[in-house]
Length: 208
Image (tube, rainbow, N blue to C red; front, side, top):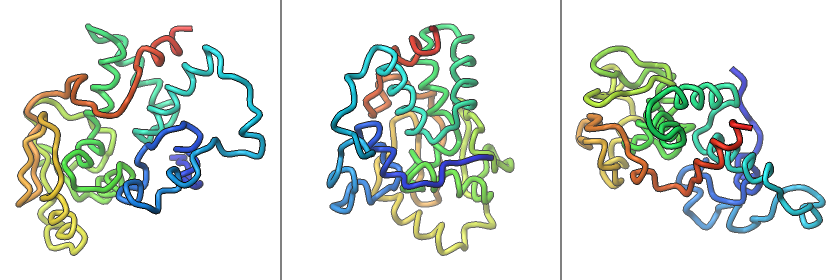
């Protein structure tokens, strides 16, 4: 599957906010966005004022890149959210938060969603005791995410477990930092998402 392989700090600069795509580096003094936050490109300072369509597009792109999704994936999630009862924008965010790679990241077992996606692809986790190596699996309330038994002796997994103990998991996840398991107590609510998102702009973008 196609993936963006260029400099990720450039993405943060383009969206005008930190997307925390490089994990701990984003919170350190080495963060490129802190040192050079202007929009990339030779003529960044002469660009025209962003119009209504541009505002909608940038919000959609920001959220899509924050969760590390391709355009087709993101559009499919929007259509799924639109078919559910309730507010489409909030439904979309709940779906995005329910992805397995995001759950692994929220558990504290990865410093970024990209790393979490790689851990899932390498078959380090199980959902309800079953093989789960697809990052896009959507968890449900009551599901239990555990580390694969064959991965417990891995030096990398042991290191991540030590780091996990010092991280704060969201209230919708009940995380056991000793063995790296997490139970989905309930699906995340809108107020559980701490990243600044205006989901209504995304709804308006796809409604045009």
